[in-house]
Length: 539
Image (cartoon, rainbow, N blue to C red):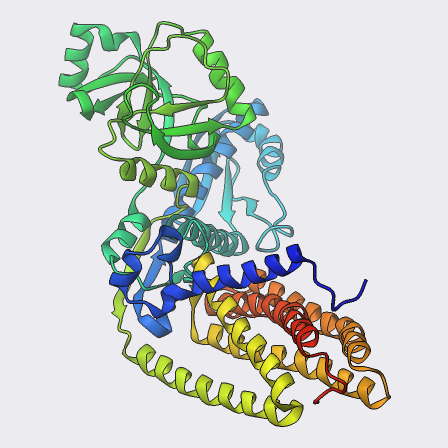
């Protein structure tokens, strides 16, 4: 089939794609008040990055000491468990300075005790560090010293910062479209930049707010007036239980402390409406392991109450009417609005921060420099586009030069439309990516037109010369753009912040330049051929 033949549905599809791109790009030239009167899909414009429109700049310090303390506590428990499993009696395991010291009751058991504790040593080769996690030495007839190695301390710090960055990314930018910057700075700090942030307090709340969710059975003592009075007055509860406030009903509940159903069991959480009264709820779904555990728990306790614990208080405590075996449900929790339920779901999906983050530097970046950069970019782009347009007219004549310039203009519109649709953030590197793709789009037209000119000079008739030019140019154009697209995708997944912005605009520009140069420009050329039927090509 001829490359210059376009069926009606192909023509309609190409024109529809261009019109849709134009509609998505249109909001960028409208004022905010004008955009508000447009349909919902036409209210999104391109977001500008921190370097163009200002935003929030924060420097966060990770509380590594609390994580190291947790590591010591875990190792202390591991030492005790290892000695118990080996049948060795000990006096105590306690902290002495930066180390842990185990005191064995009988000197005759030191060899077995040392072997048991040394079994806790692990290689860090496959983690973020190298060497051993702990160093075990005998310091006396009845004492064993356990030292957290420097390699392990460094690995813990690296892991904590990496986990903190990932949690912050999910909390602040769950859709991944803001192009914010999150990067390690120094040994224990994280740089956070959020372009266009208007409510810095909201970002700070998301950083510091926790959402530790767990499900507990309510102890029968909660229904005993005397037991509750004693618990409230003395703070004493039955063994294995704790007293938690229940703010919704201005009371307290005694719940079983141990539970296997925690926030880590949730595979997803999302806001929604109650099926009966339309009150805001949070829908949740367990992973397969916890779905079975929760199903067993509810089937064995029908008629009893279970409490949903958020941090240090109960948000709801319903009766179990029947076994919940589907692995999903909803939490009422007395949410004031859907936004409140959405905020809780966001925090739970993001997960808990591995350590406390302290804001050591905070400032709002103004957009003055960005305005200058935008103004300079507009001037440079205008001059560049005019120069490219004149070059194409001088090189390939009025008709083919106009076709190339129409394709180039359409390419820019489609890039703007795609960025608006995706809600991507445009930064200075992103502008560089757009300019680069404009050059590549012109390059594709140059390849095609030079091939057409060569075929025409070889004596081929106009239709044959144009069809051959497009056919033989397609492979090199595709090869060049695919290799650049691979580089753009690699930059997106490896880089962050502005580098990702550059990769996004570059990738979108590559796709659009191929579409406009190879498909849209060919449609215009075919339409011109059918309308004029030239005897020779003006190229």
